[in-house]
Image 1 (tube, rainbow, N blue to C red):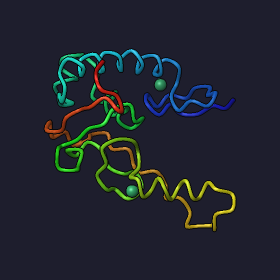
Image 2: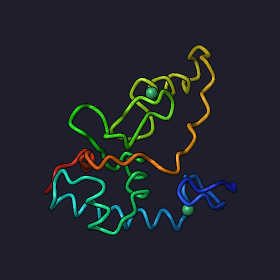
Image 3: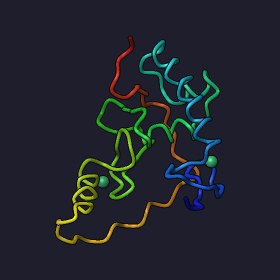
Image 4: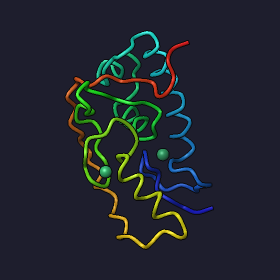
Length: 145
Ligand SMILES: [Zn+2]
Ligand SMILES: [Zn+2]
Protein backbone atom coordinates (compact mmCIF):
# COMPACT_ATOMS: atom_id res chain seq x y z
CA UNK A 1 0.00 0.00 0.00
CA UNK A 2 1.24 3.45 -0.85
CA UNK A 3 0.00 7.00 -0.94
CA UNK A 4 -0.38 8.28 -4.46
CA UNK A 5 -2.16 10.96 -6.37
CA UNK A 6 -5.50 10.05 -7.89
CA UNK A 7 -5.25 10.13 -11.70
CA UNK A 8 -8.68 11.67 -11.85
CA UNK A 9 -9.27 14.12 -8.98
CA UNK A 10 -5.57 14.64 -8.17
CA UNK A 11 -6.13 14.09 -4.47
CA UNK A 12 -3.71 11.93 -2.51
CA UNK A 13 -5.13 8.59 -1.39
CA UNK A 14 -4.06 5.17 -0.15
CA UNK A 15 -3.58 3.03 -3.23
CA UNK A 16 -3.91 -0.73 -3.33
CA UNK A 17 -2.82 -0.79 -6.94
CA UNK A 18 -5.53 1.30 -8.53
CA UNK A 19 -4.67 4.44 -10.43
CA UNK A 20 -7.59 6.41 -9.05
CA UNK A 21 -9.13 6.74 -5.62
CA UNK A 22 -12.13 4.74 -4.45
CA UNK A 23 -14.57 7.63 -4.80
CA UNK A 24 -13.54 8.31 -8.38
CA UNK A 25 -13.53 4.62 -9.22
CA UNK A 26 -17.13 4.33 -8.05
CA UNK A 27 -18.17 7.51 -9.82
CA UNK A 28 -16.52 6.48 -13.09
CA UNK A 29 -18.21 3.08 -12.91
CA UNK A 30 -21.60 4.70 -12.43
CA UNK A 31 -20.87 7.20 -15.18
CA UNK A 32 -19.74 4.44 -17.48
CA UNK A 33 -23.08 2.64 -17.17
CA UNK A 34 -24.87 5.85 -18.10
CA UNK A 35 -22.63 6.45 -21.10
CA UNK A 36 -22.86 2.83 -22.18
CA UNK A 37 -26.65 2.77 -21.97
CA UNK A 38 -26.87 6.01 -23.89
CA UNK A 39 -24.58 4.73 -26.62
CA UNK A 40 -26.62 1.54 -26.95
CA UNK A 41 -29.59 3.72 -27.81
CA UNK A 42 -27.69 6.38 -29.76
CA UNK A 43 -24.95 4.66 -31.66
CA UNK A 44 -22.19 6.98 -32.83
CA UNK A 45 -23.11 9.88 -30.55
CA UNK A 46 -20.37 12.43 -29.99
CA UNK A 47 -18.72 13.26 -26.69
CA UNK A 48 -20.54 16.59 -26.39
CA UNK A 49 -23.91 14.98 -26.97
CA UNK A 50 -23.28 12.14 -24.53
CA UNK A 51 -22.01 14.51 -21.86
CA UNK A 52 -25.05 16.71 -22.21
CA UNK A 53 -27.57 13.87 -22.33
CA UNK A 54 -26.16 11.82 -19.46
CA UNK A 55 -24.77 14.54 -17.21
CA UNK A 56 -21.43 12.72 -17.21
CA UNK A 57 -18.54 15.16 -17.36
CA UNK A 58 -16.33 15.35 -20.44
CA UNK A 59 -13.40 14.74 -18.13
CA UNK A 60 -14.93 11.41 -17.08
CA UNK A 61 -15.62 10.43 -20.68
CA UNK A 62 -12.04 11.24 -21.66
CA UNK A 63 -10.89 9.14 -18.72
CA UNK A 64 -12.98 6.20 -19.98
CA UNK A 65 -11.31 6.62 -23.35
CA UNK A 66 -7.90 6.55 -21.72
CA UNK A 67 -8.88 3.45 -19.77
CA UNK A 68 -9.93 1.84 -23.07
CA UNK A 69 -13.52 1.43 -22.02
CA UNK A 70 -14.59 3.55 -24.97
CA UNK A 71 -13.18 4.41 -28.34
CA UNK A 72 -13.66 7.63 -30.25
CA UNK A 73 -13.28 8.11 -33.99
CA UNK A 74 -13.69 10.96 -36.41
CA UNK A 75 -14.01 8.55 -39.33
CA UNK A 76 -10.65 9.61 -40.72
CA UNK A 77 -8.43 7.52 -38.48
CA UNK A 78 -8.14 10.21 -35.83
CA UNK A 79 -9.99 10.96 -32.64
CA UNK A 80 -11.22 14.46 -33.50
CA UNK A 81 -8.53 15.92 -31.28
CA UNK A 82 -9.67 14.24 -28.08
CA UNK A 83 -6.81 11.82 -27.62
CA UNK A 84 -3.14 11.74 -28.47
CA UNK A 85 -0.44 9.22 -27.66
CA UNK A 86 1.16 10.23 -24.37
CA UNK A 87 4.52 9.27 -25.73
CA UNK A 88 4.74 10.40 -29.37
CA UNK A 89 1.64 12.67 -29.55
CA UNK A 90 0.16 10.84 -32.52
CA UNK A 91 -3.66 10.88 -32.61
CA UNK A 92 -5.18 7.71 -31.17
CA UNK A 93 -8.73 6.41 -30.74
CA UNK A 94 -8.49 4.84 -27.30
CA UNK A 95 -6.08 4.27 -24.45
CA UNK A 96 -3.03 6.34 -23.58
CA UNK A 97 -0.52 5.29 -26.18
CA UNK A 98 -0.45 4.33 -29.85
CA UNK A 99 0.22 0.72 -30.82
CA UNK A 100 3.86 1.42 -31.66
CA UNK A 101 4.63 3.06 -28.31
CA UNK A 102 2.71 0.36 -26.42
CA UNK A 103 4.93 -2.16 -28.13
CA UNK A 104 8.01 -0.29 -27.00
CA UNK A 105 6.79 -0.36 -23.42
CA UNK A 106 5.98 -4.07 -23.61
CA UNK A 107 9.43 -4.78 -25.00
CA UNK A 108 11.02 -2.72 -22.25
CA UNK A 109 9.11 -4.75 -19.63
CA UNK A 110 10.55 -8.02 -20.83
CA UNK A 111 13.46 -8.95 -18.59
CA UNK A 112 15.74 -10.08 -21.41
CA UNK A 113 14.99 -7.25 -23.77
CA UNK A 114 17.94 -5.07 -24.63
CA UNK A 115 17.91 -1.90 -22.61
CA UNK A 116 16.27 0.75 -24.72
CA UNK A 117 15.98 4.47 -24.29
CA UNK A 118 14.42 5.50 -20.97
CA UNK A 119 10.69 5.98 -20.96
CA UNK A 120 9.82 9.58 -21.73
CA UNK A 121 8.13 11.45 -18.89
CA UNK A 122 4.33 11.43 -19.07
CA UNK A 123 2.89 14.15 -21.21
CA UNK A 124 1.76 17.30 -19.43
CA UNK A 125 -1.88 16.88 -18.63
CA UNK A 126 -3.67 19.60 -20.49
CA UNK A 127 -6.46 21.06 -18.41
CA UNK A 128 -8.32 22.21 -21.52
CA UNK A 129 -8.56 19.53 -24.16
CA UNK A 130 -9.55 20.68 -27.62
CA UNK A 131 -13.12 19.62 -28.12
CA UNK A 132 -14.14 19.60 -31.71
CA UNK A 133 -17.48 17.87 -31.18
CA UNK A 134 -17.14 15.86 -34.38
CA UNK A 135 -15.90 12.50 -33.22
CA UNK A 136 -18.19 9.58 -32.45
CA UNK A 137 -18.03 7.49 -29.31
CA UNK A 138 -18.17 3.71 -29.37
CA UNK A 139 -18.36 1.10 -26.67
CA UNK A 140 -15.19 -0.84 -26.91
CA UNK A 141 -15.22 -4.37 -28.22
CA UNK A 142 -18.86 -5.11 -27.85
CA UNK A 143 -21.89 -4.44 -29.97
CA UNK A 144 -25.28 -3.89 -28.46
CA UNK A 145 -27.12 -7.01 -27.30
ZN1 LIG B 1 -10.03 10.59 -7.09
ZN1 LIG C 1 2.93 6.81 -29.75
